[in-house]
Length: 163
Image 1 (tube, helix red, strand yellow):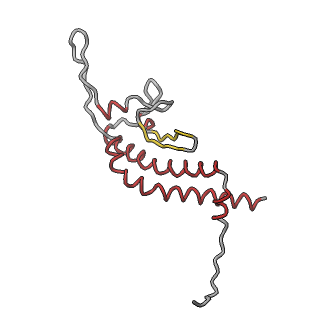
Image 2 (tube, rainbow, N blue to C red):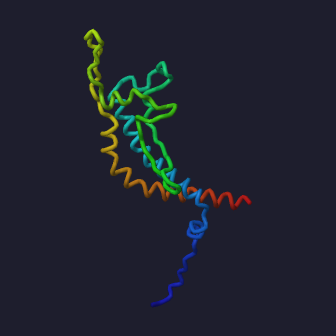
């Protein structure tokens, strides 16, 4: 086989990956995971807009808006384990308890005297969003993770050139 004279010069990315601080890897993983989960969040918000016309109207007595209750959360289950979830029934300042009534509906409610106080029909918006975007999220996860790693690497290069 002839030597064509082509040589490969590494730009330092492989060396950087071998010597990177584990916290930077976790940050890149979090960023990639969050970006992938936002696909589900966006679809759920679009479905909520179709389910109720007052999704983003003025704040209620608790200071909440329905549209802000669809949240992406990341949490640590074990030491080096990062999990992500898109939820509508979570805890926190922006969690809106009313979303579960739109998703699941309510049973008929009656007073002690037998007066009917209403019932909400279920208008599922979250489960269809999860089912329709599951494949897209799984396929985009690796690409988003690599993109976040490249962004961290470029930031590292820019910071090292400043010194």
